[in-house]
Length: 68
Image 1 (cartoon, rainbow, N blue to C red):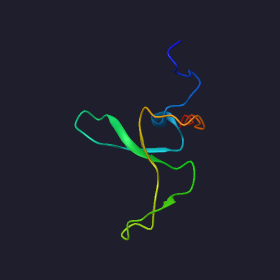
Image 2 (cartoon, rainbow, N blue to C red):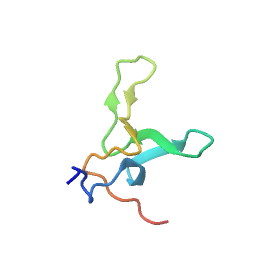
Image 3 (tube, rainbow, N blue to C red):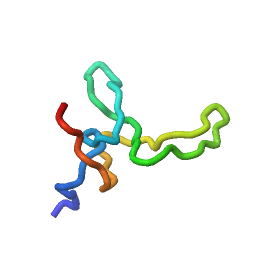
Image 4 (cartoon, rainbow, N blue to C red):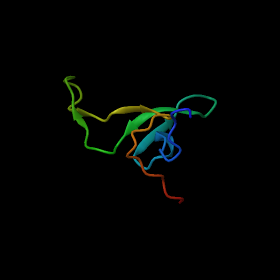
């Protein structure tokens, strides 16, 4: 067994993940998770921040995006 949970939803397929295209290859790499409210920030220019995630991350609480 490789330790990978086949039922876990990767962030890039999760309804809470928000990603932008980041390069010419049109590959999703990094984004934010909107599963919970943003956290307070120590940076005075940002009052709060959303957690940053990679497209292959998975928290175990994600839900698949619905087909639109």
